[in-house]
Image 1 (tube, rainbow, N blue to C red):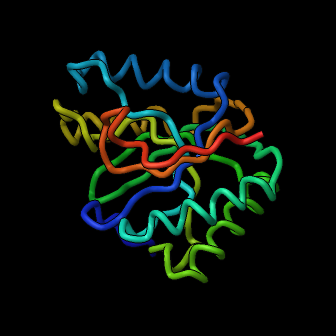
Image 2 (tube, rainbow, N blue to C red):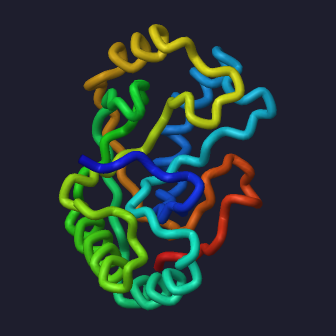
Image 3 (cartoon, rainbow, N blue to C red):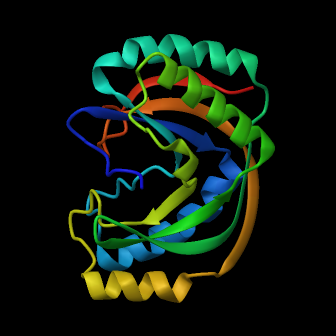
Length: 191
């Protein structure tokens, strides 16, 4: 089982999906967020796919590896097809399941292996990693959704189909914060 993130000591390695996928997925996020006033300042969590976690103290070394990996790989195709309800830290989250396309699988496994070889990745059992895009979660919410209502929303949406695809636009290293300027440590464009 994958351990929960250690926000004090870890950064996140994320792929940013292309605009067409983000725009559609963010509509659901916005409707629920506004209904519950989750983020009064209107700064929503940016939709992304976490592909790894790294030790904060090794971010500089990770940047060099990621720059090389981006050059070695071409297009990274991202496909989602349905909403799913997953449980993290005893709370449900509504996510879009991300299909393991060949390009996503090859890229993420190659990156992970390079990071593990250098003692940078914090994920020991990567074969259990589940790619997803979190749509609704109480993490970072200023006004969290009551647990029973969040579970109800999640279970209502479970399995609803919403096929979308896009190439990844960017690979980024993030701090665990909503602040759009503060969170980005490094950003790499993907061709």
